[in-house]
Image 1 (cartoon, each protein chain N blue to C red):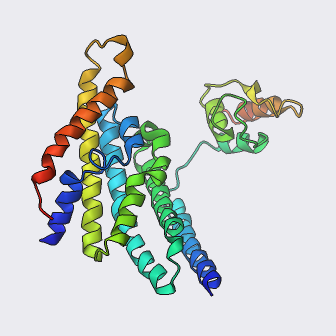
Image 2: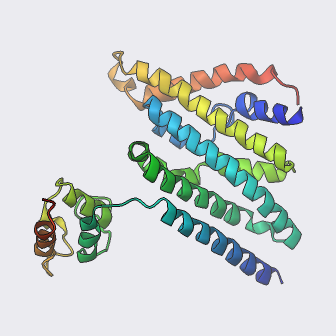
Image 3: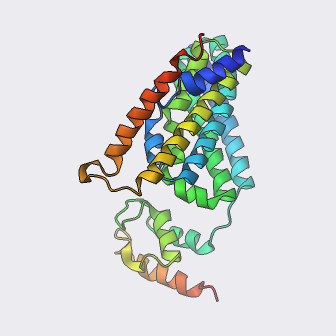
Amino acid sequence: MRVFLILFSALLVNNYVFIRFLGICPFLGVSKKMDTAVGMGFAATFVLVMSSVITWFVNKLLIALGVQFLQIVTFILVIATFVQFVEFFLKKNSPGLYEALGIYLPLITTNCIILGVAILNAQANYSLLEAVFHALGAGIGFLLALVIFAGIRERLELYEMPKPFEGLPIALILASIISMAFMGFQGLIKM
Amino acid sequence: MTIVYSTVLLGILGFAFGTFLAYSAKKFEVKEDPRVEMIKEVLSGANCGACGYAGCEAYAKAVVTGKATFDMCIPGRPSGVADKIKEIMQKNAPN
């Protein structure tokens, strides 16, 4: 039961994009088209889940050896490995998506959601299963944020906008409104 | 002791992930146009971006797909890189 609480907490109540304001760069960068948004969401979810499994073990190792100060270095190493793996995989199996994501694909390495989840897992002393569900919730939450935003931005292209608001400014205003709407989930779960 | 532990741990982790990546790079290898590799050999390899592309590889790809001309590599100009690229493109042109 607790794992589902963690899942929905990371997905809705503490949505990493709209409530914790992490991972904003890819959120604004790849939300122009629905296809790339979905691709990015799944790529990030995969990296999140895989890296949180490995970092869980790595963290236990770090504590056993008493070298916790290496946390960020080793976590980034793990994340970078999986991002590189996703890059190989997409280049082979989906060149179109690879081209569309462009620089944002290798930039998943520095996506703060992924490092954030890994570090929060270590801080909260989650068990392996809880860590995986936390990462899954964060990943699906990121996917959800991208899909909502891409859907709105695709429609927004059709409307005439006052010149100063065209492009990013209106996107940022929109993001703030969605963020306020997500505050409505606050009372959903009592942890 | 801390120094030894950190060095050994990072060494082992780096080696393990490196092996994994080398394996997956082989497994998911994408066959590229051989001319891209040949042009990359001829270029200076400074990745300076003076040609207007993100690096030597991006420029080589652009040449092969016909988006760029042969004479855009500025550091390679004194050593006649443009002629070498032209030669590669003509010799290995697909029929």
